[in-house]
Length: 367
Figure 1 (spheres, helix red, strand yellow):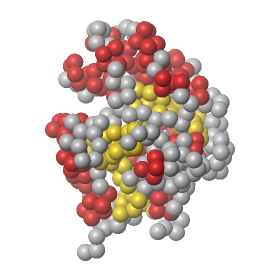
Figure 2 (cartoon, rainbow, N blue to C red):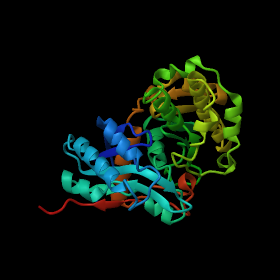
Figure 3 (cartoon, rainbow, N blue to C red):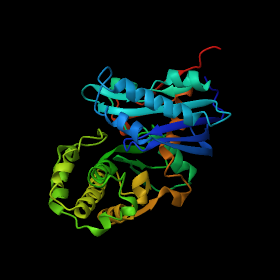
Figure 4 (cartoon, one colour):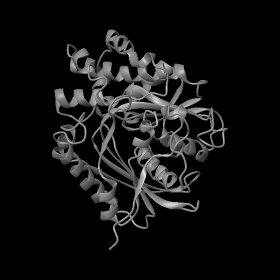
């Protein structure tokens, strides 16, 4: 579809935190990043968020799924229509359920609807092919992280840590030429990140998150809860591995006896402990952790990660990247790879048997 020249691609992301939709432009040939373009954000209304949340954990055809899909498609179309001169769009959709060793993976939102609405080709359904071929279908950003490491001129191994609803880590050795080269990457979900903390804040205080870590800073960590979390079988599994947003739903019960502040502090400490545990699996310790996602804005969480890991922990803005938009940018980048027939996952990122391409391209309907 594309000849290997850089194009303006638009990527979108609606994550497990259910806050809204990110959209961002990347100029790329699907290998190197040429430039980063404009970005935009559309928050979900309370009603939209509740509509999507009601369908979490559900599969195609089940109650609420069609309604959630319509919310996701409408929100994305409204936001994506703000961008001009786009050659291709990447649409992740909204993950409702993820069970790669069972029923598969389920993202709502139809790329054909968006291609028709926007009048540009749309790459979508990025995960299904990887799962069909034995992979976890997640995480999907590592190939983009590799390109970012090249873009910032990194020489030594480093790690990108995404603190969204679920935490994930990409270890990158930028000395390799291609992301699919053996030894270039290792990626996996680390464990719970903002989802348990955000759910606690919503349930107890009617707030979307612990802004600036203000509540957690006043609390005391319950180490017994943290240690019990680390006893979960997930942490004994070797990566690559991935999680569903609700795989650690039991944390809500585990902190039910704690005060608001102590519960917030404990759920924040859980994130740091999970990341430190994950670093036991990397080929060699990175020289720093570059943090993206909402968790990087929580100074208590960032300090706890630094203390637990003994590493330099900084937001990706410190190296000229956009921590709010990195995942949306990833799907712009991946869309171009899909269009060029380049791999989007490999054994070290999802556990798939070989480097494979994912996603499909939907073209606009003829007028």
